[in-house]
Amino acid sequence: MIKFGLLATLVAKPGKEQAVEDFLKSAQPLAENEQSTITWYAFKINANTFGIFDSFEDEEGRQAHLSGPIAKALMENAKELLASDPVIEQVEVLASK
Image: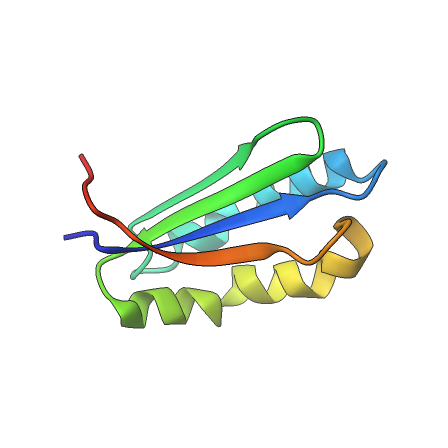
């Protein structure tokens, strides 16, 4: 049962919007290889704001994702692509379908 999640909000630097979108799309195969990541969504909120939502069955899966290749790649590229540090929130999933 899905009980744990992560919600990340990313604001692109001016002129880096397409690069952030491309980065997020390129991360999908990495997410598919993470056995403990049940769902993974990358989305666009508006012209320069993007998000990621992932879900996990347990805290161990969430922590594995936080130390995995997507998180590492995001942090390595954050200064170049993002206007501010990503906001990453650990959430509790109350209901899902």
